Length: 260
Length: 314
Ligand SMILES: [Fe+2]
Ligand SMILES: [Fe+2]
Ligand SMILES: [Fe+2]
Image (cartoon, rainbow over all chains, first blue to last red; front, side):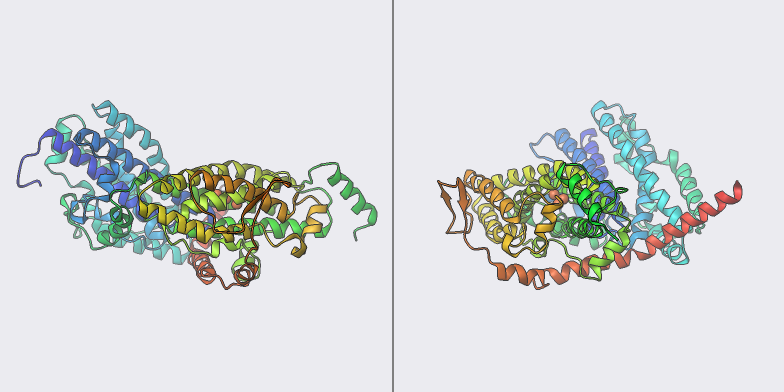
């Protein structure tokens, strides 16, 4: 996508919205797997709440992408009728839910990144877009607080919880490089006044993550280790396909049926 | 020792419609009954998350996914209100949970049936939440204050669940042939188990007399079941679905719908643990509980450390 042809502003905008939405749908779908299986009742509620927020955000971003596209499609088209290689979510979001430590570590990394990203996007020139982002921003702040609290509790809890938390961050680390992936889509949206300048907050984000891990008595893994790339242009782990198969099967089995 | 005078005074308060509050004197047997009934209700809310949760990942539109997820989340909230209400009687939630995961405390048998299609979760909203409302609207007037208030809060959300379920049932009933087939099959499978939710016939319900005397319950099982049937028959008719009971007929004299014999053998089988999903449900709940043990321990350890350092600081 970034090599073959120049995208128009409209195409870039759709791609940009889909990247934001895909991250949230896929992570929300993973998070919803906890529903009914949480470690304690209060957390069942909290995890379901985050899943609801994420999928809700995705849904409004998809709906807006459909509006910009103006081809008579709706949010469900993007969620249900695209295949693995058409999804542009971060690989970080599609990895299996793992144990509670893994879920929390991933949510913390994602929410802290989203926090900085949305702080800029809510000032976007496009008022409809900015308004939507501003509404979601309040919930992102809650996700960040909630996941950060648990990183501290589990990191500085028992030997077992510390070990699990450390393992989770170690495993997730190589998926953090992509958070700051930038290509023509980002550049065009930034120039258009509707994008976030990812590099502008990279150091601040790293500091927030490092400070949190240190406070949680955890080791900060090596930022310079090998990092995965490619998801913004459709490269994924094999986990995504299985998730989509489950998510999309009913809708695709009855293409003429109305389910709204 | 409970004196006759105490028991009489207690009964007088109940008869006068007063609410019993946690610090009030109460017969030990009353306390036991509230704990038994209330915790059974709480466990049901929690186990009830599983059959519907089964379709969250496969819901056929983003809107339906959000509606279903929010609904299942509400059920977790109901469990929480109810456990809190019961904890006012001096039992801990963890003890109550142990009683159903590893002991013989019960939960509603309806949740031991599988959800085989997406229409099942819509029919559950309509019938199962519908039946729960009939029960819980009455329990909102129960004599034990905290339990009554928890039910009042729950009822508001259950009505919403029922409304959403029925709307979706109506939509499927007028949808494609596949959607109609799906929803009729769900009604066929959930009709009798839903009627069983009200419990055994009055003649067969050992706890009822005492619960009624103390106004823990305000109506008998059969009264509530009849109330439910009278309403649902009309709702089924309105959307063109068939209830799987050839004996269903309106009695002009009583003004009620008469229905056929409930398959009680099946009811007792499922109560005894032999439903399609009994073992799976318990396995899932135990697994969640056991997998979460290290998380609960860590949270406690962290809280202890924080308290300790706060004490040192002051
Ligand atoms: Fe409920
Ligand atoms: Fe209920
Ligand atoms: Fe409900």
